[in-house]
Image (cartoon, rainbow, N blue to C red; front, side, top):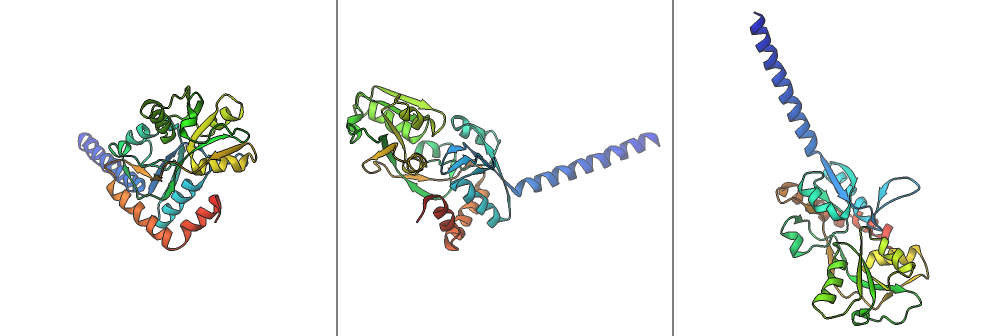
Length: 256
């Protein structure tokens, strides 16, 4: 009897454990865990007054979650390890101003593009010596590491024959602007919306040289296996653009 009772108890425990696992799995499908590097205003950043992670990408992801009836959890992670973190399962979506590139598409799937941005050259407001890419010869250029700005500056140096004196790479998108402000860099290569936000935050300190010299499309990144979630996110984007929610979020961060 004791043995039978023990076996019965083990069976009941196993069923209960399986039930908990099934419940946990079901609960997990109701959540979108988002990885972002919250140092890329106005797309993602930490509101110092409230301590909340905010920005265009994050508001859009929260709206997508609301549309899908899914809870959205945001994790602040380092940009340099953001794709490895996705692949290892720390989160299931990257929403971090990530440009869709062929190289990245080899390892992740991207959502439909949700905004267009281009790269620009930024200098100090009083510097008239840089008017385009060729004028970066002999200059110190600051970029965010592993960003498309980094790739563009490297291409200028290695493939276009522009003899940039030094490419200074930083983990956070705001750091190159501090380097420029302090006179330790002569120019920054950065996404146009991010450059615009820095100019708004520090009026009269920086200027954008000419027009964007590339076209950039941002997308949300997911693991190759998460095709169902990808389809849901794409459909939610269509709905949010149709019902005006996307435009409201856009105006909040970029104006009309």
